[in-house]
Each structure stands twice: as C-alpha cells, then as structure tokens.
Amino acid sequence: MSTITLVGSRLAEVGQEFVYQGEASACEGCPYRNQCLNLTEGVKYQVTDVREGAQTLPCGVHDDGVTAVEVEPAPLRANVAARNAYAGSKSKLVGSCPHTGCPSHEFCEPAGVDFDEEYRITEVLGDPPHDYCMLDRDLTLVEFAPSEE
Image 1 (cartoon, helix red, strand yellow):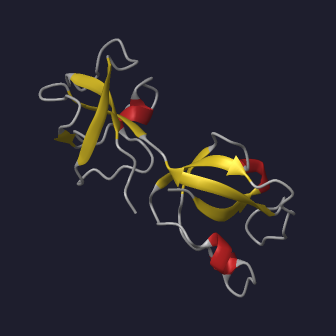
Image 2 (image 1 turned 180 degrees about the vertical axis):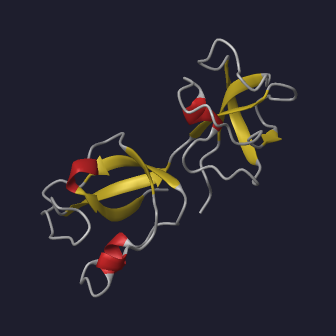
Image 3 (image 1 turned 90 degrees about the horizontal axis):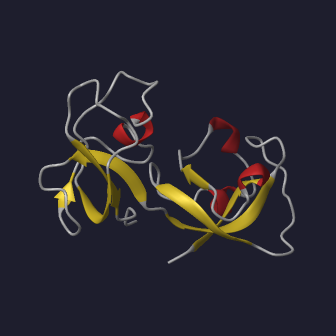
C-alpha cells in the first residue's frame, strides 16, 4: 500500500530509494511536518509516483524544497549465509564487514536492514558481486520482503 509524503525535490523521481531517518531538528515548527513525518523510521522506501501538479514547498532540510510523492516500502537486497537461503525462509545478516571497498559491501551492510532482525527471503538472486569474501564467508545474494509498517 502506498503512502503520500513529502520528499526533497531531488529525490522526487520514480524508482528513487531512501531510508527514512525520522525528524531533523530543522523540522521543528514546520507547517508541513505532518505530511513529511508520516513514515516509519529506519524503513527503506521507494518512490512509486510523483504527484502531478504538486507544488514545491519550502523546507529547512532540503535546499530545493519538498514535493509530494507516493512511496512504498522497498524490497531489500542483502548477502546472507548460503546455507539454508531459499525463498520463503527467514534469515538475517551474518555480521558487519570492515572491507568497504568490496563490491559486495553494500549488500553485506545494506541500508534499512538491522543486523539483529530476521527477514523473509522472497527471492534468491544467486552469487554476490564479489569474487571471494575477504572474511571467508559463504554468501548468497537474496531479496528480502519489504519491511511491514
């Protein structure tokens, strides 16, 4: 189910993804705060529609202002332990990784995914983008179901 919210004008493109970080100090006293602060903190969202004819409103956080969009929780891609990784099962991340230059790092520590939480795997995508894991982990790239609000 989509939600109408306000996002920075630069983010207002169909397909754009972001993790909602909650209220910023600049939001205090803003007349539009109820329209902006209506998402769940820590959840990754995807813009599914930009409201046609929506005006750009001034914003203390986004220098180009904000505009109305429809968003839905986004599916999350992550590397998980290959053992028992199959569609329909639940899994969680195997732990943090200090190798930020690795092509898989964004999937080992994906935005919007908590290390201590289990997620339902909707699809097994296959081998991760790295040639070998520098931590010697046997990993599989999967897609988790979007967070439920």
